[in-house]
Length: 146
Image 1 (spheres, one colour):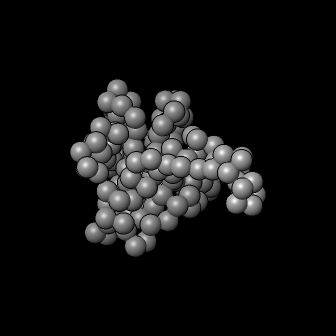
Image 2 (cartoon, helix red, strand yellow; image 1 turned 90 degrees about the vertical axis):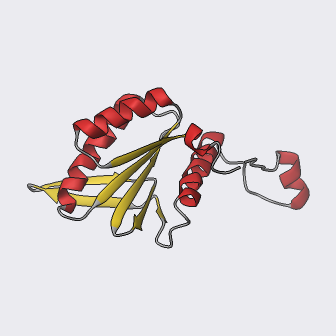
């Protein structure tokens, strides 16, 4: 739950040259790890892997926050903390294209967002684009990790 890092003075004291991570990146990684734990630490969990496909001669590329398989279903993870909603909609549209390219392979988009309002908008876009999706919020995890 708590994430710690060394201050400049602390890094100097132990001789470390690493700078503290940007807090937004750190929170994003922690939230992504929530999904990893929630789904039982999948053995084939891959972080920030590019997905490329072609449809009608056009090449598309999408980098999901994580990817893994669950009972034969390819799961793509997206963590939304402060992304503009228009960007989320563009990403969902890209997932629609990716899922079409996968053909008969079952796929699931797991979207982790911050609040119920964002959840509802993301869910409505997933339904609009006919994407098999599970939308989770931080509230879904409040009791899970206790």
